[in-house]
Image 1 (cartoon, rainbow, N blue to C red):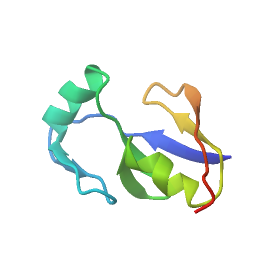
Image 2 (image 1 turned 135 degrees about the vertical axis):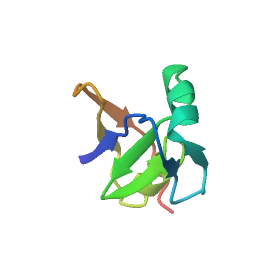
Image 3 (image 1 turned 180 degrees about the horizontal axis):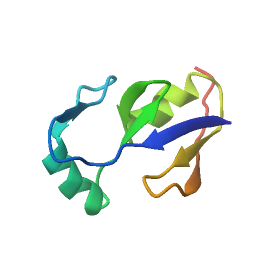
Image 4 (image 1 turned 30 degrees about the vertical axis):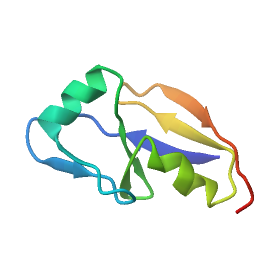
Length: 84
């Protein structure tokens, strides 16, 4: 099972998804994160948004990701691998 870490919003700087180039300041990301609309996730030293991470992870042919939250709690994110 793959392991990834949710990025905590900070007071300065920007975050950008490597796959889709979705970019937000940490301030704006914090607002979206608190509303449950967006998560940036660190996977293999690279930042992805919550939409792109399953696509990237599926290319490894895994079916689940162990997601470690900012509070240290873990959740399992399961997804479908379509064989492409």
